[in-house]
Length: 120
Image (cartoon, rainbow, N blue to C red; front, side, top):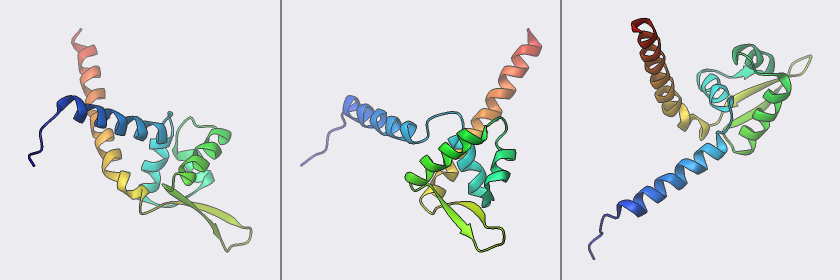
């Protein structure tokens, strides 16, 4: 049996996959949180400082969503006082290449727009 290329069906599958991805990583902050945690585990207060502009309430909600989707894990440290650290899961680490690609594109885009502004 020969497989036939069906561009409409292939496009539909990609659009569905992109939609699923965007549903999980929706919003302004989730990719930034994932990107931070891809490099090192962080405590709540560290994330609050690192993710510029996020409120505490929003950070808490985003961390819960990321944990539900198994992208990060919440670790209660055996310290006094008790501290909580967030870490990327092995599954969540599969997004590291995506965060790097998005960051690279964003830097190129910023350069392009800024250079366009100085030309005009």
